[in-house]
Image (cartoon, rainbow, N blue to C red; front, side, top):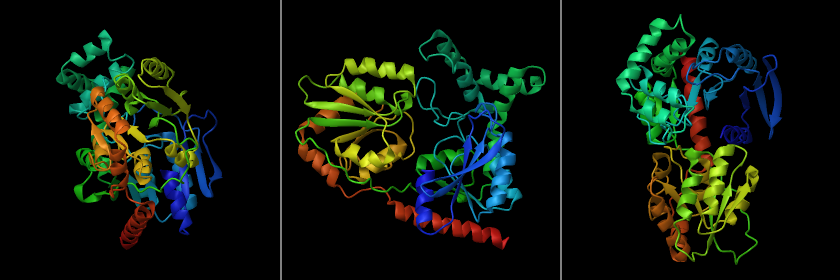
Amino acid sequence: MTLKIAKAMSARGMDVVIVAAEPTSNAVPSITQDSVDGVLVLRLQAIAIHDPFVSIRNEKADALLYEALESVSPDVVHVIHFSHVGIGVIDVADALRLPLVFTATDFWWRCPLERLQLPNGARCAGPGLFGAACLRHRLALHYSPETLAARAYAAVPSWVYAFLSLAARGLSSLFPFAMRAAELSRRQEQLRLYARRIELSLAPTPAVREEMLAAGFQPDSVRLLPFGIEVPEAGHSKNSQRPFTIGFVGTLRPHKGAHFLLEAASRLPAGTEAKIQIYGDRQTDAAYTQTLDDLARASAVPVTFEGAFAEGQFGRVLSGLDVVVVPSLWMENRPLVLLSSLASRKPVIVTDQPGLTCEVEHGKNGLIVPPDDPEALAKSLHQLACDPSLLERLASHPKRPMRMEIYIDALQAIYREVAYSTRSE
């Protein structure tokens, strides 16, 4: 998303510089410079990967951020994510008197792991008193949800974790674990203070805005601005006689729900003339990939794993699909796969998640199924495979995502607004 915005702004004659964190390097902290598709990129090298449950800052990044932003001296700083650079970018922008705009792409301000999702996959209601829910999650993190240990952590009442978090503050100087638990217990109150310092923030969905307000952002400082999308360059399917083709495109991790699609595939009626193509990097999560392989063998229709592809090939991939399934098991945030599919007039089936249903109207430009009902997904897939007229109606519906040029128009107006406000102070 960052590069898409930068390239669109650059095409309009604006000087754009991306500052990117490179947290995995073991070299001496430094700033390197290169160019991607004509956009200048300053990379903060060797900033440590910090435990998201422990700290909201990345102290190694702060000095490099100051050096990078001072050298560029931008009119506006647009932050897309705080995860690696840390919350210190707000302090740096303030020190340099630079206006700052923030676009939330997930739920990091309420959840250290960004998704507001419990270990068992259910939706999390938030950190709770003194971060009690986060402490429970941190303790259970290394256990499969089905294990006795994970079930034991889940069974402990929230007030116990709240008490432990509060007690950890008094013991933080004595025990390393208590220090980490104490930091976690303060995470939300510290973020609340920083949230109030951001002049203008942008939420791509109403659900994200609600969580931002719960995190301490002021209502008049958070605006709803859906992501814009460019229509992928059209591709052409070489095989017009292929069977009905169902596609999944995304990260092969549990929260994206590829396994949910394959569970539904095993419930398709015998004789269904269809196939499933899974696009995504199989090296991302070896254990999960094995689960997908096992489910694929039980599918009632053929399943192939097509691997990852270059962004410029998305139109080609879509041309070979009859329907795109976005079976996410977390709240989502207007994912680009969904927006690109809708912009290309490709029918979609999505799970009932707020970051998906904000774009999809059931029976109009797509179908919506419960995220815990593979039978319902199988029924929808079979319905589309047997009813070409329904596919055509979904593809021809006028509701489409915001176009990228309109999105960029809105961003430019916001940049001018915050820059003028800062100069006027």
